[in-house]
Image 1: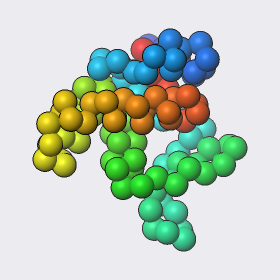
Image 2: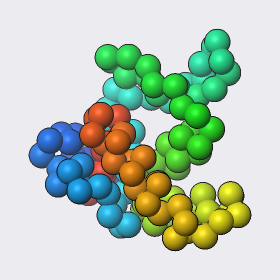
Image 3: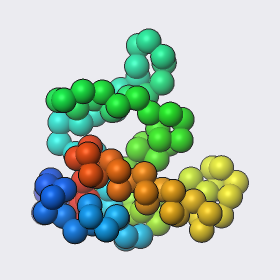
Length: 111
């Protein structure tokens, strides 16, 4: 992420949070959110000031690609190749999952 890039950190003010991220949106972890392996389950978890969100393997695969550089379309294409399905088959589910994380302020859209 470049220093010149603006980051939308308020989901309430972000129209993409209400409508869902579009294919060209670049999601990234929100400030003060980090991904870490859970000591008990061995799975990944999103840690944030208010709590912990345990990720299933699919959620982990999606969140791991949210680096603020890749677009939603690129994330979907990479997951489609990984899971041997078409990007069209995954697009709705990926966008829905990202939108839920944006609404919870765990992800943001880099602009």
